Length: 456
Image (cartoon, rainbow, N blue to C red):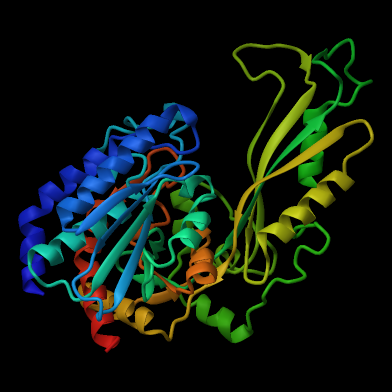
């Protein structure tokens, strides 16, 4: 609609300035030293909701970080869209790899660089600005509720409780989320599924204290060496996960479904060049698109032990630790896989060490319907703004709350993301293209328009 295009053109710089204000707040949910900043960011989100036209917005305390809720109800008889996002961000470490300050947003080559630029402040804020645009131009076609949380990056452990206690408040017809990616702006896509997650921490303990590696080396087992061997044994020569029963419930796609999935544009040479690698790695018998979309994985996210400071210290460490995550696919459950992992890891520990396994957080895999009114509205919105029909894809990441929306609220979800796989989310130099940010603000109102029209 021309009125939306005009409003966006007139307010582009302000929309960017207001996003920068959010990006400057270090709302790192995983680190307690940022607790005050997380609360400050929640307050900023609330104020932006009110400025955008919400009739009410509130900070909802939880046992952890707060949830921000806002709503704009124009007619209870009209459809209601529940927008979900998160204002918390990943830790910025390692800081020395950033080209600019992680909480000092800058624009370079048409891209916003800052922690949270894409995941998820930039994408979440598109919805706030889209609401403002529809509200200020008197073109809002349906009711909008917004629930923006502060614990997504640490597992959303308190959001399930909030859902159960606020079913009436959160009553809606569909959930709309922008926390995913597209293939590219030349090849717009809609994610139709997400992998689940089981996140574990392991500790391997040997002697009761750090030892001199000359005096004791060769006679006492080194926990770092043992941990590395144990981790290496979790994959076989075909990069197949060796945990007994791990694949028993994996939903296998048919040859026709796999063929359709692999029709998405993908340039392997460009992929390797962009990542600076000579060759890809993964489960034998599957393509890259299948490995990251429909197959489960197991990866070490962090490993430490012994002396890691400057210079040398010939120590045989007392213990070693690692953080390990598994991405799950339909029919696998995080609780079952976590238990399976713990049992196996403990069983392969040799007698000269002891092992402790701790499950942190998890989430369930989901597949969203492509024949629903909401999906069709999202597809039409993308076709309108991009001039192309979106390609359906499977996302490799996890948004644990999607499964909870269905189990607790009975609501399906549409994943209308505008990020790119190379946006460096969870890494140094996270970015979000200006084009994507503004394209999201342009596209989202069309979703509401078409969803309202198709729901009649």
